Amino acid sequence: MRNLKGREAAVAYREHGGEPYHFSVISYDERGRPEALLRYTENLGFDAIYYAYNSMNQLIAVTVADPYRQFATWYGYDGNGRVDSVWTKLSEAGYGLKGYNGAQAKYPTAAMSRPQSAEITYVYTKTGQVDSMFYPAVSVAVDYRYSPRKWLDTLKATKGGSDLFTQYLIFNAGGQITYQSSSHSGGYPLNQEYTYDGISQLTEWEKQSGDIYGRTAYGYNSAMAKYLTVEMSRPQSAEITCVNTKTGQVDSMFYSSVATSSNHDPFSLYSSSLTNNSYDVCAGWQLYPVQ
Image (cartoon, rainbow, N blue to C red; front, side, top):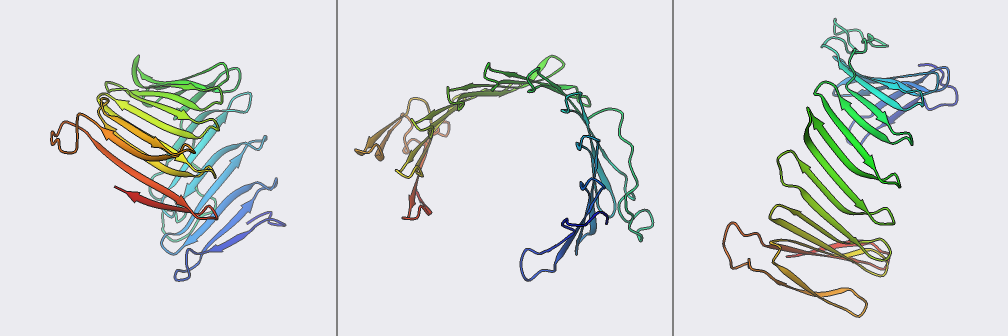
């Protein structure tokens, strides 16, 4: 252990009084940056995390080691100090803290060489957002597109020119998502819409994928705590009618649908659940499920 003056050097902790203590010790480099965290537990013995930095104090390598193996992650940066490459490697058995003979713990662990090919590479826009990610091992590219306000509005993952996953987002003036559409290759898109009240609280969430439709409505009390959640899963032809109190709170609801509870058609979907949330005078939350 090095450079401990004025810094946290060791921690003893346990989850409850009936178990033995676990111990962690920390070592620092000459600049006061954590370079190693060693931990002892009764089941594994020692495990450790080692850190390495560049001259700009950016993390360039993290190595995690147990008694038998180690796993390392390396980070590369572009000229603006942004992560542009990530490499990973898992050692063979015998390169952990105990070494080949299984008796003598080693510090530091035997260093592993960084692989030639990165696991992930990043490209950025001129304004600093992630423009694309690429996974060389599987030849998958992920592209990101942004609105004029720099909000992510399109995400697309492709391989060999074929779409694997796409997602589109629409925002309101306050930056909240109002519409979201996502789809996997060959599957039905999942479309979701979000509605908010005048103080930006979520009041309604609708989702549809193929013929499956769902809707969740939310109500709030004067303390802005959620007190009512209504969830429905039904065909689009079904309707819900709400009776509101003078303060706008939902008092009762009536359901109508071509697929009723007495309709035992296995291909029709009709289900509903109601959850009431009530609060004490100190705003403590209580949950009362009602079926």
